[in-house]
Amino acid sequence: MSKINDYFLAERNESLILILIGSAAFVCSLYFWFVVNERFYNGLSWPLVFIAFIQISVGTIVYLRSPQDSKRVQNFVNTLPKNIKAVEIPRMEKVMNNFRIYRYVEISLILVGLTVFIITSAGGFWRGLSLGLIIQSGIMLLADYFAESRGLRYLGYLKEMF
Image (tube, rainbow, N blue to C red):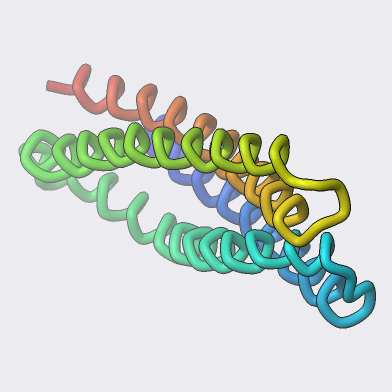
């Protein structure tokens, strides 16, 4: 059962890091808009703030939900072990499939950002927007990489139970 606790605790810890990163990106975007107020930084602000919204939202949901999820799965193990196979394994397989989709989207956004960064002029709005897209998509790709790695180990553990 400690593997179940470990998985959900790690999910909760990473979600807290994601909330902090999103909050920092949000504050930076406000600073860039209202204090710096130059074209490059205005462009940089857009992906910072929009992806920060995703980071904060997803991070908060996972942070708040993880303790209940851990208790739910532990309850399955203790009282309804068939629900590991019927409920938790299919849920995790769906989560793992979603990570593949997220990875393609994040890599695509990084490639779009790199392309726009290369073809636009230095100091312009689009150069800033592309840099923000590269940074935020890279952060999300890295966070999802760690979450997916944890998820694979957890799913393997669940499948070993049956």
